[in-house]
Image 1 (cartoon, rainbow, N blue to C red):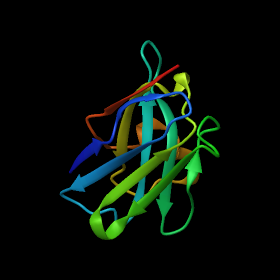
Image 2 (cartoon, rainbow, N blue to C red):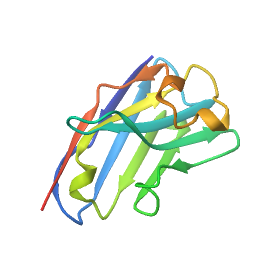
Image 3 (cartoon, rainbow, N blue to C red):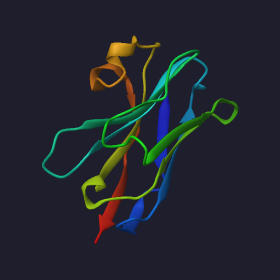
Length: 126
């Protein structure tokens, strides 16, 4: 299983970016998929996740309202639409997927996810 994230880049405060994650070797047919991020000098943190066949999406408080996670199961892709970006959103963003569907309480826990993409850098400047 490989996850390929794309769509990162540099944007000014208030701008938007759309991250995409493509899965090879499996389809997002069950379980969950999500995004984490890691800013320089900080720990990796949960951003958003989608769990199915029921439940989700789920967002970290910092991502609520501004970010939207969506998936296209037919194309094995998941997207993260990010709006009203702030400098504190600057980080490497990772697409993640578990080997099996996690329980709700574990959706935001990085140990839940067995597969991690290579990360895509998002830089928000003022």
